[in-house]
Amino acid sequence: MRKFEKTQILKNVGSSWSALAINIAVGIFLSPFILHRLGDAAFGVWVLIFSITGYYGLFDLGIRSSIVRYVSKHTATNETGELAKYINTSLFTYTAIGLLAAIVTVALTASVDRLFKIPPAMQTQARWLMLMAGGSVALGFPLGVFGGILDGLQRFYINNWTGILSTLLRAALIVYVLRHGYELLMVAGITVGLPILTSILRGIVVFRLLRVPIGLQYVDRESFKQIAHYSATTTVVIIAAQLRFRTDALIVGSMLSASAVTFFNIGGRPVDYAQQLVASLAQIFVPMSSQSEAVGKMDRVRKIYVAGNRACAFIILPMAAGLLILGKSVIEVWMGFKYVAASYPVMVILTLPIALFFMQGASGRVLIGMGKHRHFAAVVFMEGIANLILSIVLVRPYGIAGDAMGTAIPMLLTTLWFLPRHMRKQLGVPVKTLLREAYMLPLLLAAPLAATLLVLQHWRFAHNLRQLAFQSLAGGAVYGAGLLWAYRSNRLFHVGDLKLIGEGATTEGLELPPIAAGYASEKEEV
Image 1 (cartoon, helix red, strand yellow):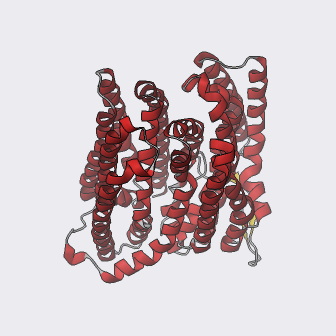
Image 2 (image 1 turned 120 degrees about the vertical axis):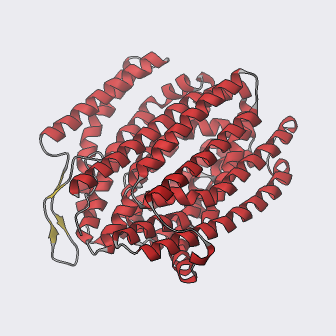
Image 3 (image 1 turned 90 degrees about the vertical axis):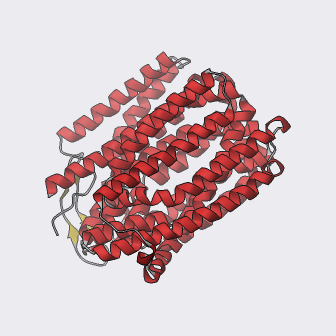
């Protein structure tokens, strides 16, 4: 059982990082390819419309997270009847939400040119793009149940590999149509159509894995109440995430211009890639902590919390150092020199708070998995509101950098003041213990990497891909050597004693399996 579970976690994390690596590589390649063929205004409209439909995530109402929690919980306790009720109730609810999203899409399509500063020549395309993108998201709600079921079964690798196939096919088709003279709407059709086909494929896989009956007779009122109770809090977290990361394009597009959206997106996209890499690891902690809490194994939950945050720090710290030191070169090589002056400040302002927040990437996932995320949701929601207000206030005097500051300031407060103290109350792990066990070693190993990149950039600023690749590889080699030293000295996988507050107990000598960057809890036989 333990061997199977280690293999499962390794497949989940490995496929998650593979999917994200391919997604980032495709994004890095496609973004300048699309930008230089469509132009700043058309690319800005593209980003703006997909930012609008990104807000449709609010319609999710936290149901996706409830699917993950209850599928993992009821498979752990072998409650097949309850599992059927939750799946059918979720599917029915998502179908109703999809219909609502379709109605909203029609309304937005009729008024999108009046809500945002879209050039007159592009208003017709903007309306069609809105209709296509919004319709795809609406259909994706009921189809998204299957992806949630796979996550709850801890079959992340199935979602990831189907996503990889979709991403590669999308890239190939977009390159083909742009080279043959097609424009924005054809690219949009490819972008919104392939995820639908991917979800259908996932549904076929789900029905082969789970023999769960589908029908209205299995839609259950009590199951709906439990989903609603759990999802209500998760919905607040989702709204907060939208306010944090999805308002920028709307504020810039409505208060500045569509072209300004392009400059902001160039500065923010690499930071977004970094946080996605951490999130792709952190997602596995939701079903893991849910299963552990369901069978009363809180020591394992604490292990997931500390070790998971340590793994997140190992990932985000070197990437943050790279963005801060090599950011100008990254933008110049990726998009062109003319974008550096405006976009690099956005990158710098966003990197620090996002790095600090995602160093604690496991914390929120553990709370969600345990169903104890009510206070966390309230705080991040207030952060999101503050983000929105500050961004609106600062964007006029400071431009796109002001919008970035509106995101950074509230996130720093949540990250440094609230989250570690709240986790101390929930799990009894002192903040000092968390700092020592989760972050000391990652910080020590990231310092030589940062020093190496600073010396290389001072010696010769990277203006082309070859120079940038050399500096990145040199820094990566230094960091890799540090990781190898930590592994050979048995420091990489070991977490020391966790002295718990208020219990007079310790969780001693946690030796973690060398998987998922060495920091994922293995499932024991129940």
